[in-house]
Image (cartoon, rainbow, N blue to C red):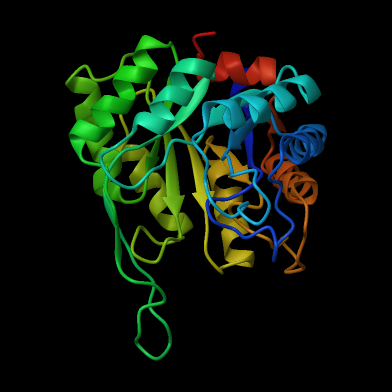
Length: 292
């Protein structure tokens, strides 16, 4: 098979605010390393890493402590030396000093760059807000500040796009010379106030992306079976795919899992059914034109 027949599988082993007291999500360096190794053995070539506070009872909350982040990354690298690491950077508000310091200190190959703002909303059946309406603010000056750090440290940005207009904005960032090289995009589907989890809009998103873009789908929300159909459509269209306990707890048959490995195994099977094979980390680096 040629590289065109390979698909990069990313695993997002833990989420942003998922409570480890209620769900089996990894938090400690050892747990993160074990989860990543399990996903790698199942076919993942990239890990999207969030970082949690390590104090007892605080594991549901993010940490931008440089040492905590370094301990987790070191554990992952020791367990799976060749996996690609994509650092999370998402933070509300204009102060990016925490994630920026972690990027500069640890220089991962890739890092998420949230490419536009989103009113983060969810409504209950009774019409009440599930949580107070929140603005996930990513204005251009904040995006540029992240990109300046990434550019200075030879980190490839992965633009997380929650809606079509955000996808189109990445083209303007490129034209404005905010980053160089091909664009890497994640189409984030299923957030209630973002773009819907629908396979039929994938061709539109691809068409609106910058020329020669690399892209993957991230599917969240309760769709379960429909969500896996979107992964299948992405693989058939030549895109890359992502799963993990950050995105879903449910396998294609609707059963629930408590580990990342079965999710990656299911996604690897979908990739093969689409006539492709999961890329190794070395192949993924070549496909994605990574700088390191």
